[in-house]
Image 1 (cartoon, rainbow, N blue to C red):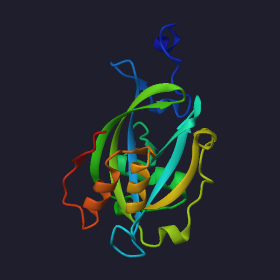
Image 2: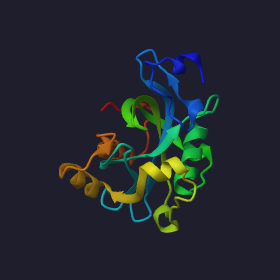
Image 3: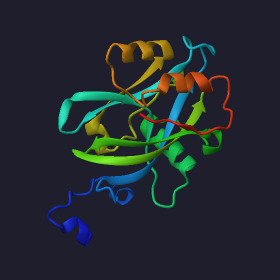
Image 4: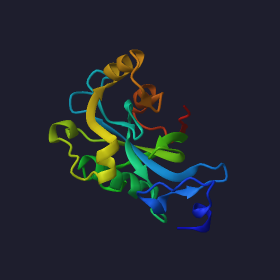
Length: 198
């Protein structure tokens, strides 16, 4: 443990994986992250037929507070972001994709969130993976770490209208503009990296 972490006024570092998090100048624990917009178009290309995979998780110290978010996680020191996105996809869903099949990064954002009862900041890159038949092939949580098993609750495929309706009814989804983002990418990526601010 570093001297900075031993000081009484400093919060403890997140426990797993510790080497991804550093204490930022803003006083928040920080890491870079890679996320995947996993889309299944096997049913068709319209918003009703397109399916998007999301994860539901909860706050470690407030179990009743939960939200939906995209597959992804931290980028290890020296790891290529695209490779990190593919690794996270494999670990969290069991779907093994060549990193070259990921499109993007199609977007980026800086997110502040609670993790292990601490407020953290993660600068994220978003990649698109269109995998026809992914829902039918099934996903697996077998690659979840013990920590993920404690704070992640389920994986679920959503149609875009269904997800928009859930948000309108009060479901918390990150990033907030996820539905229009995916809708805008359905016809193909224009090469622009969108700023996905919440």
